[in-house]
Length: 485
Ligand code: ADP
Image 1 (cartoon, rainbow, N blue to C red):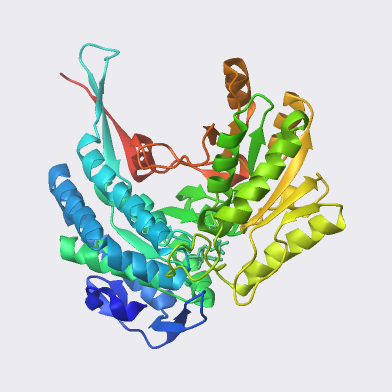
Image 2 (image 1 turned 90 degrees about the vertical axis):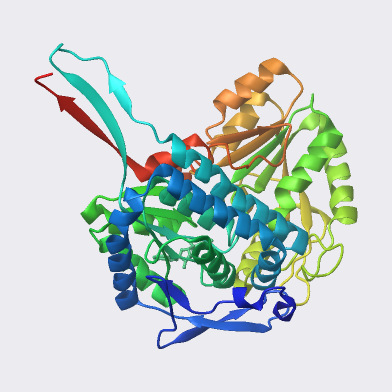
């Protein structure tokens, strides 16, 4: 699939440090999850190169922060234009290494690029403040200054968007960055880095350290231990987020964490059931269930339980098309790796063993694919009620009262996305306010976009990405108290 790129020079396999492509002494293989085919061997860098990237970023910082907001904005805007001009190629690279269907991959390119566009605009709105003086001989000001060298560690499920959502606000604020992209999807990341160079982002301002899974741990340690790195942004598992927090404690780093979810999707008896079926399908089966905001637990009120379950199962049976993401009409690609299949299978088998009723699917397919699966009569003792499945399995639970649904939804250490369907305005406010989640979708199954604050509460993370708030983690407030006026 990569032989058909319009611009083959986007296919980079070396890392980027200080504006130079770095081959390193070792390589690691990147494979196509749909076919197992070998795609490329990418530079496998370690702690020494991570130190070089930190030094390069630190050296590039003064000139980057000295640029005017408008100058930074113009460069970011150019990067956005180049990402969009190369949407087809970036989409192809993404489908090849990540597996998501090509239309979905191109959609992610547009979504990922939108953060660059948004923060190009926001760069010009990093305003300071003047405060009322407490003494007429004084004047009080607040500056908002770039925090310094930032590091971003990103996951494989959104190979572009999880990078731009962190890097664009950092660059807009005047901070240089070091990116450690996911080892399963480095090619999309490197293509985006190539376009960043073409856009005029200066050497050392955007560095990309590629590494395999072992070296990622080592590079992560260096980034956390460095007292030059002032901020770490991470999207990935809660487990790794905890490790990074602990490793960053000695240098008291600011952190933005977007960790696991366990999204509830509640259908009340007053809901528009057909709309809820559409929303549940969109939310559950996007990227074959491999997003942190995918519905993990579907709760349906008893009066509409059978109707919803029957219609949802029918929808999944007819609408879900499994296959290679490059094939026409496919909307369910492969799972990212064998361990992901094992997890889905473990959750499905556990649900069946505990009395779950299989309405659709239930089994592995050849290769790295799993049947889109719907299981009714799910119960709170099942593993899928507690753990994030991160795959194409929808368990449907039954509830009686609103309070019972809210309690079940909140009964998790996670708090990222939640969804519910209701037409009752009182219930919409009550439930929205009661859900302990950073995001609530009401009568919708998809809610992310660049100008809204994306993020979680509880153990789903810290901070918000996107929106005007997305820049806050990358600036420090400085209070100026001037006397003798
Ligand atoms: P996922 O469950 O999405 O695979 P992970 O949390 O395992 O998420 O990985 C997300 C990112 O974190 C990847 O870039 C991976 O290389 C990196 N990573 C995993 N473990 C560590 C670690 N101990 N230190 C630093 N980075 C890590």
